[in-house]
Image 1 (tube, helix red, strand yellow):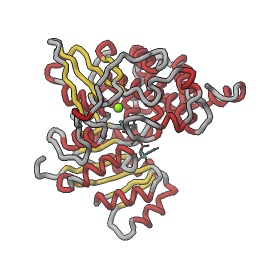
Image 2: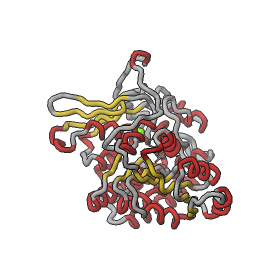
Image 3: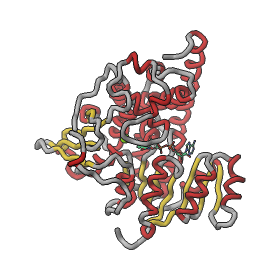
Image 4: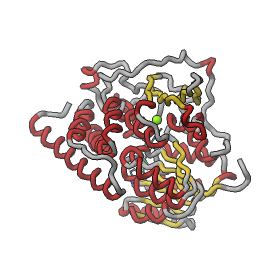
Length: 395
Ligand code: NAD
Ligand code: MG
């Protein structure tokens, strides 16, 4: 990498992606100048992260945790912010790269702020890309801001996607591990516990995305994410089950060449790729040892046991409202599942319910997306509560 330090904001610095990014930066301290780090509520971890990275400021979104963060940072000159206002303030400050690693739609506003003020925005936070993908990409084009995909599949595609000769691309092939329930019957999944659903075979991740991987909603979100990131119609986006998670995704060209990016199942590789882009960085990440790797296998997904994938293709055809409804319903349903309010298959039931009344093409503004997102959340919450009155549990 060049000698000049890159200025960087890490939004969601205490999460699984945030911690992997911290590891990459601590292994390359001469390359980065960390401006801001943020977290939702874990003041202790945020303070440790801010000190370790020598960050200039730290934002805790929960206002009631501000005093704790101030006390923890009192012997430093790290500036403390709090609340959504604090997150908005730091995400509006100009930096070379913002790493968007918040989970869920809570990250949308800060992504839009970063697009207007950062040179590049590295997006792990896929939910805003699903619900407001058209607005995010339009804003990025308007501000000449580079969007760098962090999601391992999209980062793989990004590394082998010839943007200059896009017409020569036949399709992209997104690989999926199949999650912990890849071989389970629907009946078995109906009785799955939270603990079983959280136990991903290949990746260690935050709770929400782990549940999304078990339902394969994660892959559904990724199909929609790819549609917006690479501006491809659903016919040019394919999903392939690849349980070993070594081939992170592929691009097929018109001459039959298929290019892929491979690597160990370690998010520090795609994170290093986006932080250093267009250059390359050493990472503390695992190395791929193909000789010691089990045989690689590829299979078509089973849409009957994992209907979320088919729903995602349908959502893209129906437009922005359907994509936003899909995401909002899933966020509420995953939270309900994690809190034992609904069964595992109840998550898909909630999404189907929300999609029944999603109509209309693109939502025109960020405010419209946020309002629509809230409407769907309320409707799905009512649905869960009403169903609970009639049945013991949504299954
Ligand atoms: P996580 O739950 O481990 O971390 C989430 C981070 O966001 C934390 O720092 C938390 O403090 C912050 N946060 C949570 N709620 C917030 C709120 N309301 N306002 C502001 N900040 C809030 O999640 P994760 O697994 O790191 O995933 C982050 C994003 O990256 C998700 O969108 C996920 O789908 C995506 N992603 C994650 C992985 C992975 O390996 N973990 C891989 C690909 C994509
Ligand atoms: Mg992924």
